[in-house]
Length: 288
Image (cartoon, rainbow, N blue to C red):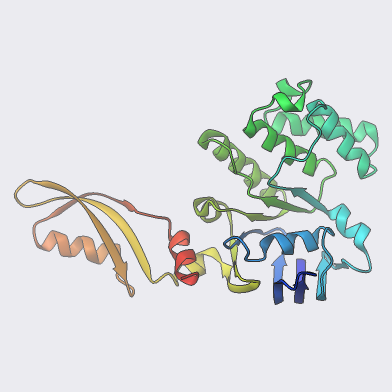
């Protein structure tokens, strides 16, 4: 089943800006997809149309088979959104924010209390339940945003830059939680500028540029299309001298071939690691 089906979607703002230029996109239910693109690529407009914040100019959009024009209330009930900017009341307590969000979706209070308790525990917010939200750290605020988005148990979770302003430890903890949600069957779409995050978390990637989709598909397949891979290699020369060199492999060259070539000359490879993740290289390639 498709979580999202988009055909010929366009959006022209009153200013004349053409934000989306007739895009087609299908996202399978239960998948996790990265939506990538530079500022102005159309990612925000696409998400805003999905969530009903912006009206499309033409084309069709359905979420789990429900059209966003003819059945908007059902569509909204299926989606949980975590925007990049914090948009909860800074004077409310953590638990209240989550409970109130459940109320907006008609979740009975007893059910909401149970779900809130689970989310507080899962996201490491239990000891902050009675804290006023303005006192939370940036990472804790991000976790609160996710808990609020999930309390009505949406089938589709939209994450806009989930790791923005989050330190490394919290980022990896958030990755584990997103993986758990995905494993439970939630469809996840995320925008991110951390391409390492997309490569580690996502099965599929959609790259947008100036209102168009210029590349999409399974991450593993797309990475095979990357024309160049860069590595930092630590080698020991026959003389015993240790050196660190930058290596770029192109046109199907393999790491194994490179190592064997060095070995034939008497040079030993002590360490080899990617200079940049391959998804980043592909992203830069298609946006050049």
